[in-house]
Length: 265
Image (cartoon, rainbow, N blue to C red; front, side, top):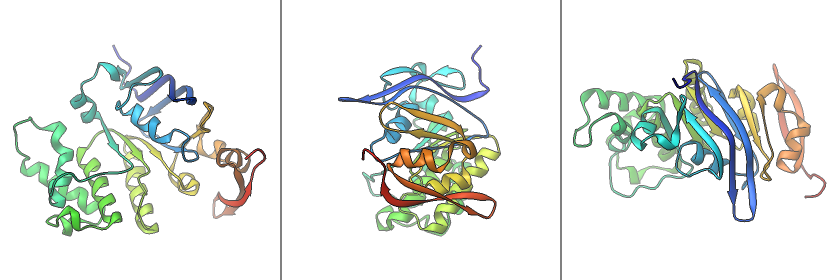
């Protein structure tokens, strides 16, 4: 019987691009209740890691399991019933209202020829309410600002209602308050048993919300651990190739980039 206690398990996961190994032999287990922040420079492999975990690309080595099931043996519909991917960028190929766009999140749960039910619409409207867009339900998706469109994409993955969320830079285009609001939504999901993996550019958001952090150095190396043990000025200075200083704020350390490139950069 598969071990379903771990939501996502990566064994020896390796990710390469031509001429480079970005991630080598990653060992990652994400259980319900975990909020894992993925941190690293541009080009370090964060997006490719997210896409690989979501089953959109074949790893260059190793295996991925969702609830103990090899992802390569799962159909896309089955994956989507368990895992929602928020991509970094979303294109709108066809005109649609905000509500119609968010309802796409229900498609893994309904038949191919079936229409969305009243219950599906209620789930979608609740998700829009969570991101402060319920009154936008009838708006044309093409009339929204970048930040509003990002919140619609977040409402869509909430409407999908999986127990695993893989979020590629969920705070893109969001103002500071909506960044906090959105990450709090997913922190609450984790506290209620979901597994959350999110790539972030702001290390201080990881400090605030993540229970664990995965650091990707872009040369195959990685580090994984509890946020409070992994996030320190020395590691972050190496990770981002710039000096990082820790500052005590309330009950935690936050980090500031000094703008001084580290040796060898």
